[in-house]
Length: 78
Image (cartoon, rainbow, N blue to C red; front, side, top):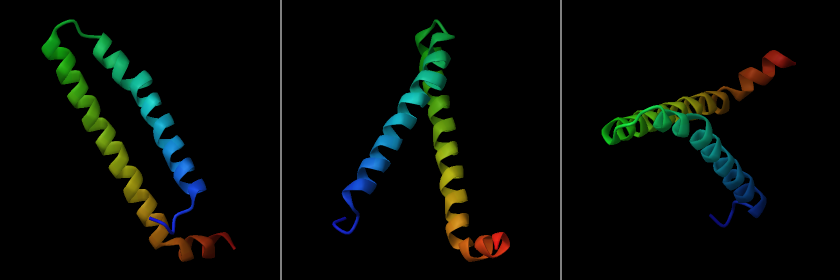
């Protein structure tokens, strides 16, 4: 952990915070507000978290593909 600079930690942390606030405001709050019963709200929260996990996994997979094939990507651009 000491090899990662403070700027990187600040950038990652602020990006994570902004993403979580956006997820809460744009996805979670409307999903919970659309239902009246407690069990419906709980179900909306659980399903929204499944969506969040799926989006994170897709982002990690695409990021890994870009890192693994970066030489080929830069070769196409040149």
